[in-house]
Amino acid sequence: MPGYYHPEHLAKFGAIAEGNKDLAEKFFDWYGAVFKEGALSEREKALIALAVAHAIQCPYCIDAYSKTCLEKGADLDQMTEAVHVAAAIRGGASLVHGVQMLEHVQKAGM
Amino acid sequence: MGAPIELAVLEEIASPEGGPKGTKSLQARGSSLAPPEAQLRVLNDVPLAYGDFDAALASCGWADFRPADLELLQINVGRLCNMTCRHCHVDAGPDRIAENMDRETMDLCLAALDKTAAHTVDITGGAPELNPNFRYLVDQCVARGKHVIDRCNLTILLVPRYADLPVWFAERGVEVVCSLPHCRKRNTDSQRGDGTFEKSIEALRRLNAAGYGHGDSRRRLTVMANPVGAFLVAPQAALEREWKAELARNHGITFDRLIALNNMPISRFLEWLIETGNLQEYMERLTNLFNPATVAGLMCRNTLSVSWDGTLHDCDFNQMLDIPVAPAGGRRPHIRDFDPDALQARRIQTRRHCFGCTAGAGSSCGGATA
Image (cartoon, rainbow over all chains, first blue to last red; front, side, top):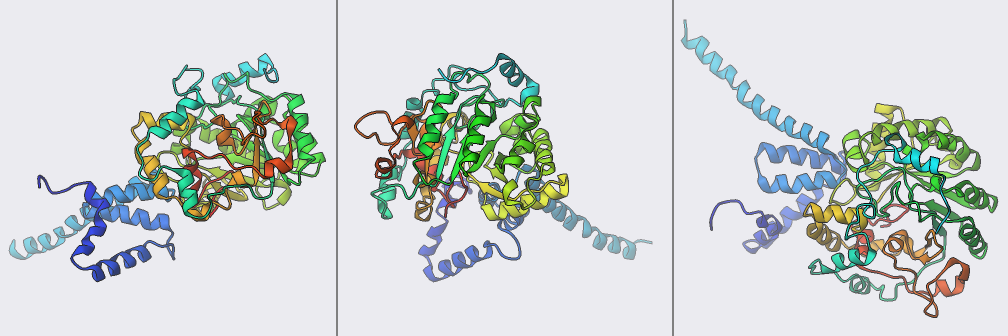
C-alpha cells in the first residue's frame, strides 16, 4: 500500500471490529456517548475535538471534526481560535521543558 | 405580468445602499441553470445509492404521502428583492420585476383563505415588503384574525421608504421571521453580501425598539438560521441558546426563538454546489441522513404555497421548481379554483430536492421537524 494515510479509511473506521467485535462495540458506544450534549454543548465538544486533532496531528480527526464543527454551528473564527489553543499548548509544552534545561545549566554552570 | 413596481423603488433597491448584493440572479446572468427543469435534471443525474425519495418515504410507511390538516397558507408575493444572496432558492433580486403578485390574485388568496381553517398566513418573497400591495394583504389577513408572518431579510427595513415597518408590524401583531445565517459577521456577509451583518444588526435593534424580541407573543421575533456552506444546519435548540447569548453580549439584541433550516439544493445554492465541487457530497449527506421522524411534521403536509401568479404548490421549494400540486382534472391548479376538499385528498409532489427537508433533524419553514 503506497503511503500511510488514506482519506477513505475514515469511512471504514467500523471495519476495526473485524478483529474484535466486542471491543469495537464498546469503543463506538463510549465514543458516541462522549460527544452527546451534557455539561458541554455538542459544539463545544466538537471544538475541543478539533483542537485535540491538531495537537495529535490526526488527519482523519481533522477532516471529521472540521465538518462536525461546521454542522454544530461553529464558524472559522471559533475553529481557528481552537486550533491556536492546541498550538499554544503544544508550543508551551516544549517551552516549559526549558525550565528543566535551565536548571541543568544553573547546576552545572558556574 | 404581475403588479407594476414604481421606478423609484427599483432604482433605490438596485443601488448598493438599497441592500447588499452577493451575486446576480441566475436569470439576470442568463445562466443555463435558471430554468427549473435544468435544475431537476442536474439533481437527477447525481449518482446516489439511495437517491429515490419516494422509496425512502415508502421504507418508513409513507408510500401514500398526503397532507394533514391545512394550517398555513404561504403566499409568495414575488421574486423582487433588494438583495441577491448566493444561496437564494428563489433566484430573487432587484432584476425580478415581472414576477410580483397583483391585487386581484391577492383577493383570490383571501377568498381561498376564507374557505379554510388555516390559522396562519406566511408572507414571503423575494423581499415581500417590496410588493406594492403588501400592506393591503397584511391588513386583510389581520382583519380576518389570522396570525401573519413576514419573512424578512432585515436589510429592507433600513431602506427609507420601509423604515416604518417595525412599528407598523408591531401595531398589527405581525410575527417577523428574519434571515440571519450566522450570529457573527464573516459568515453572514459571505453568504448575503458585504455589509449585510451590520445592516441586519441595526434592523434587529429597530425591531427590538418596536417591542419585538422581548417575549411578547404579539411582537414575536424569530431568527431563521441556515448553514453557510455545504453542510447541515446545527441543532436548533443549541443554536438558539448560543445565539441568544452571543447577540445579547455583543450587540445588546434579543429575540424570541430561532428556527434552523437546511439549504435546499436548488437554484443559486445548487449553482454554488456545482461550482465548488460540493454537489455529490452534499447530496450523499442529505440522502444518508434521511430521518423518518422528520416526515410527519414536514411543511408540505400542513401548508399550501401560492406563487405570485396564483399557482398552487405543496411548498415554496416546489414552487421555485415549477412543480404545482397534483392537478385535479389535468388543469394547472390555480388559487381561483381553490377546492379545500380536493386539495386535502392530493398526493404531495416529491422529487430529489425533498431530501433537503428530511435530513438530520429535518427542515421546514417552521424549522426542525423531528
